[in-house]
Image (cartoon, rainbow, N blue to C red; front, side, top):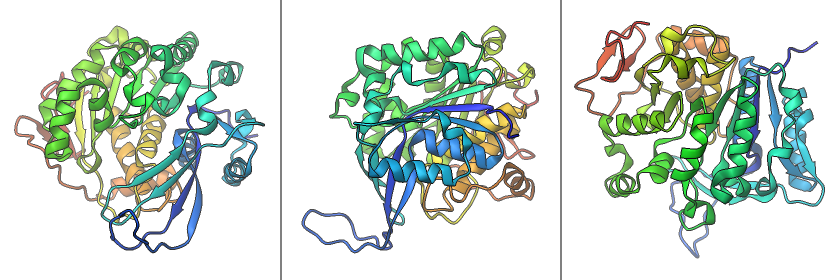
Length: 394
């Protein structure tokens, strides 16, 4: 008998179409760009995070929605091909279009996406089987900006979903996505939505670009002009303060090549509200500020890197790892992701990721001014000025 799912993953799911693009010829209107074969891959937070968790050895239940069309059939076949019995709670909507994304990923050039939201726009509270969550420790919801009902009416449907989960003592995790600024999602009041929803969110792990767009447009615009690599540690601290003040207990900001920034609440009462996913080692997770560098790998593609980083983080949490071990596992899984062209094919078991880390896996230099941070050379982690214990000890 397979173990009961430890983590449930819900939200956005799609089929990714990934043409091989070996050259670095820029995409220009009217120009023929040579491409290689196209591969189909599961995409979106449900597939990326859910499959990565299962590959790590953490049983995950998938709760997404597809159409009963050709793309939906391909997507469901690929999910079953991963050996996932957890697809039993996937919904196949008979008269709707499956979401798809065409991923244009050229070596050394940031990805371009052509996306159709499809049936994700109809996903709502009734699509979640709450009775199936009895053994679940963590519920992860991904990409509400790509799901119309999640941002309409100031996020009321998303709030209802998260509130119902917190009644069950389940640890709630949330990830975002960067919306097209000119779209309805891009024009939504994300600050108001997050103000309403974050008190229900225990683990919040957006990337720095999308959260600055949602909460701090002046800084977002300034950094867009200079390049997001010009972000400073004080910007991260400011965002972390803001998100913790809005109600989140654990904040992770994905920084691309600069790694993963972590802040946790200084309130023991709030930490104890995190629920079943955290365990009992509250002292180790209380009042922390860490910056974790990326591991060096030969990059093939970056599709799903953020989702896999989250899978590593949640996997470490449910194993009751220390925060230090959890964050290093998270960036380790993210590093394994970029060694493959798609989101999950290069994800190994958790044991293999941890072995690679323990064998002195080299890290990339962090291109930030960390003059007032402390380097923990044993863990290869930087400890920030907001960390309650500046020696980094729990």
